[in-house]
Length: 336
Image 1: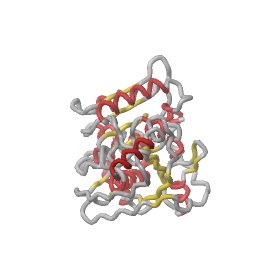
Image 2: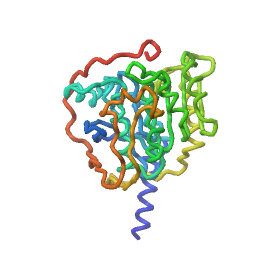
Image 3: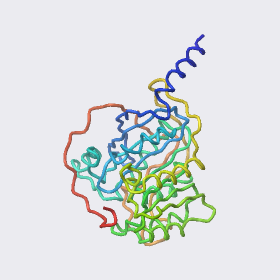
Image 4: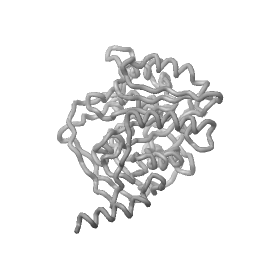
């Protein structure tokens, strides 16, 4: 009888949480690898074994970049977490709460400073929500960083795949080499999707050439139009959005299909998983290259292993007080 009731409940819920439904995101906070408190929005209509995508925003923005995107990914069968990295500000009406807190506590908010937030977000999802495939998704500067993180943590299996909208070597001003991202691309061993606009053909050629031939990959640039920078390319009002979506869907369906996700029937508790592995060091691709001298201890990532501490999930706590984060440097016209 109980089994029949459970089946009936699922049948009643499927039309509500089906592929065409919008999901109200839940506010969550977690800890970056350097102890910083980080804000995220959890879009999770499916049970823990559905593929999970962690979404990182572009320069000067916030988790709001994914307001028009995450619900559509939900419809496709994916759970998502949209993250506020400390390097950012406001978009789509949402202030970057992590950037506000970083500013209030005197922390640096350059692009490279977002690494602890990004690694912390991936660890948080691995430990609390995702038992299936985990995909790291970046936009602009975070697209380059997610490629770095994916290769630096490949022994730990932190991510299973990468989506990168407008990645590039944007980090030489922070002491990294002009081929920082390309050097890591050369070590990529996970399925990767890269999307660009027409004026980014140089970065596209550079990074595509760097990828190992055996690495499963899909590179996209729109035809007949200029395209749009970063994940904004998927916004419905963006030029060529349908082209970008079609290319992305092809990649996800090939390497991370979500054919029959099971809807959540309640607020599932966090499912903590014990993960083992060695330490991570998000630094230059080659230990002996000139970048090593620039690696600051704040970029060192603690090991994921037995006894590692994970902060419990906190849903709907009191929000960080609103405020204006420090004005951040822009990378130039190509990122506008």
